Length: 62
Image (cartoon, rainbow, N blue to C red):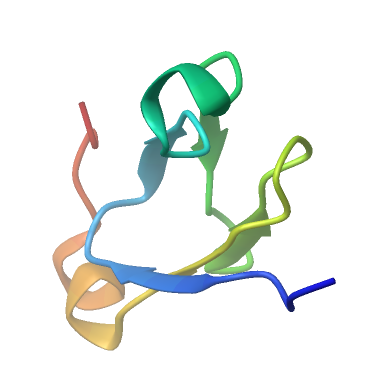
C-alpha cells in the first residue's frame, strides 16, 4: 500500500474527491482549521495549509 499523498494548499477548506474520476470517492469538504492540516476520511490524502494561507486567513476553497 502506498503512503497517503500530501497536498499543500493556501485555503482553509478543501474539497476532496479522491481524484481519478469515476475511481475516486464522493466529494467531501474538509476544514483545515484550527490545526492547519486534515486527512481525508475516504482516501487518506493529507492536506496541509501553507504558511502563506495561514497568514492570509485562507480562502473558501471552492
